[in-house]
Length: 208
Image 1 (cartoon, rainbow, N blue to C red):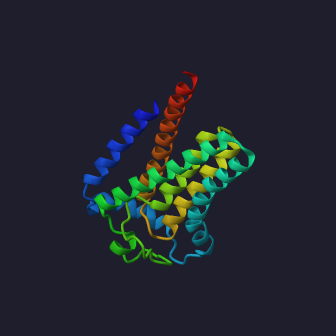
Image 2: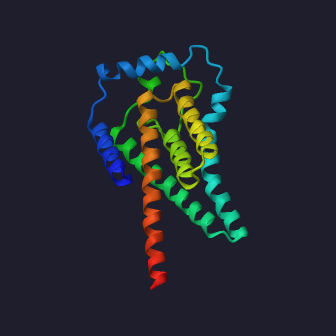
Image 3: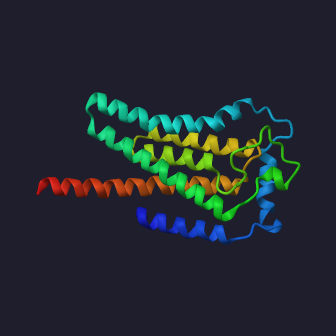
């Protein structure tokens, strides 16, 4: 499947999700699975560290790559840093737009039995998971730039851990996490595709 076809299908799916009303019948599988993941007596110290760590990891990684690229005079590394930055920006824009359109309440707001060690005070909208979209955008972007299993596997495992932490902490439904992962992966593919097209165009001009 080509990147454009993948992105087109992903956009259609997310637009469909944005127009759906999450009624009680539709939410039953979501809340049932969440009840299995969200513990009644949570030991949340570890997951409360994993969850917000995605911001430090995702924002510092492209900055560090660019600085190393400048110091080493490595054009490829600098280009990869810009591409990863584009991935993060696209993911953030799509996530914010979908949250605004869907306006789904957090699980603990609709189901008082959900245990949540803390309340996100910056955004009460649940669909999609912003932490998960950022984590998968970063992990997929790295995997696309450096196609080595020993780089891709840990990055994607970390992204999956961030997604799991959002459910464990009771602040997102499983479908929020799946949607966030789809946004992150799609954003990385789109950024990778656009960067490749831009590089080819610049290379073509330099050869003329």
